[in-house]
Length: 120
Image (cartoon, rainbow, N blue to C red; front, side, top):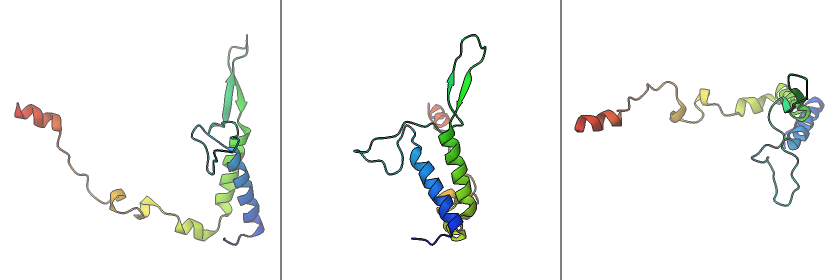
């Protein structure tokens, strides 16, 4: 367990609480078969649109739960301990090996269709 100061602990608790309220079509982290799942919350600022008669345009229902999640996550990233950011793996640093290296030249792959046409 890492040591957090009061501001970090408050931000982390807010983020975890908001994260646990969010669920998309694929489920969410920590999902249990016995657990009653919350309603599906799409990852967008708009929950749904409502077509009102004689208005000429749809009305938008704000997705407060997702907006809270996004703000809580941004606050947590702002105050998270520095070592967590330093230890986070990044493809740009080459942490995932050669397969993600941008330094390697592109390999030329022969076109199989042209190869087959040439053989005929």
